[in-house]
Length: 367
Image (cartoon, rainbow, N blue to C red; front, side, top):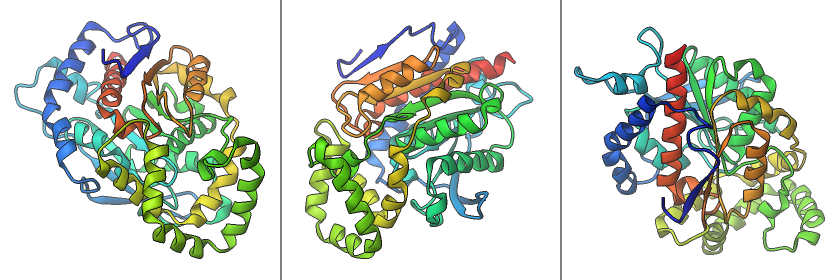
């Protein structure tokens, strides 16, 4: 295995992948080899499907895109059918990708390129992000994001097995969903991927003011957010004017090692496109997040926890704690990677997701 990544825990025991499922992983990797290379060649932000609007429970429109499975070859064997369908009379496994704070669905570029046409996949912009509607402050919180996820599943995955994969705030959204709808974990949801995230104990001031010493950051950041919320339009103008400084900050806090400049610029564009008003609305809820007591339910299904060891926003300790609280969970630590591990180490992340999707498919087939 690459020295950049290491699996903590039992490879076979945690997911219980049978020999046939292991073979399926190998075939999936071979099938999508071209797709992985294409991920490097396809311009960021250009992978698209016809948009679907899902209306949240408060009336807010959410922008959703669904990548359907390509038509199966006539001579497809049993392993290929396992990946595409849990049973002949049930829909295929659908993977729902949930993005993080101040990003949008395009952040899943390398995962989308890898799985496009091979796995039914759902991508959506969280409220107040990307192409989704702007939320009021009262509904800009993690619990609402859990309800939004439920609405997306209701509308675009009305039946069949589901795998949920969330990055950063997207992982928090999944934890909130699990707290609110525990009966769906193991019945509809057959796999969970938690990437660069936590269920509590986060110091959000390190996100806003990473250059300020920790002992000063808390009170300063809270005061800054309260003040700047009133003048968010002026703040957005300053952020746009300071583009070069912002790019340097993005490089330092999104990635842990040298990556192509295009990666940094792409992430910086997503961050800059998120109005500061959104940052200020969500900011107070990160400090109050405390849901570690609810993650045990995720142990009902195969769960993969993934994080970079150089993550400066949701440090590796959060992922280790998640893994310790979720029975049977796997932990993939990507050495030297930062918060945007889904881009920086996309080969390792996708390989772990292979295992997760295959385990969920095997469970669905065994029903």
